[in-house]
Image 1 (cartoon, rainbow, N blue to C red):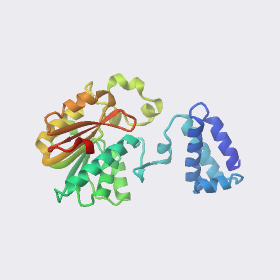
Image 2: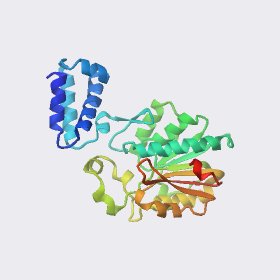
Image 3: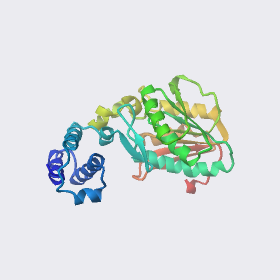
Image 4: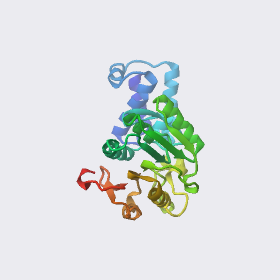
Length: 290
């Protein structure tokens, strides 16, 4: 089969699972990985017949896609904040909303940095380590710790940190069952926040291939992590400290209410207009700048 024939076969086999534009994008993502050529070169070489090993890779990737497996897991990597990160079945695939939270955080932390020389940052539920690694890239002198109860997830996080040459203090710990010991200038988290009653709303590809412990609240209380973060922050957030949280869009007001005792607390929408983040701080900021 030539590249052009593979492309047509690829489109045909995935016609019931993906839109035409999605099939087009997926083909070039896999072709780039297998052929080690960019999209422009691939288009020029549509009459090329790939090597047997490359053809086998195409068929294997296609089979996994038809089973619903996310393409990032098939490739073993995902792009986030313009950087490459390793992923597998033990960690969540990075979402655009988390990029939005980091953009918000980086902007606000930059202001805090001028007031605090040695920033201490804590990421709760780090997964693949994308949040602390991106923050370390932007604030190389910060002391960053990252907690996760899954040792398998932390293996991925450590691999990513080594790949990006970032020094992160990864901690294997069940956050809900342990107390914080230090004080932090920034607490940031994208914890499990999907309620048990929302399971039916989650796509099969997510339910079947991504870790449930990183998606779903461990109890019937979908706000359990946020309650503990709010409680811990009262004692372990520095005088000018800040909190950044990705949240369940259906529980925006309820989540915000947990942080009402902070001098500043605000519900922030994502680019789709959904309640997606809570920002809280131990000092007041101009809301128009958030």
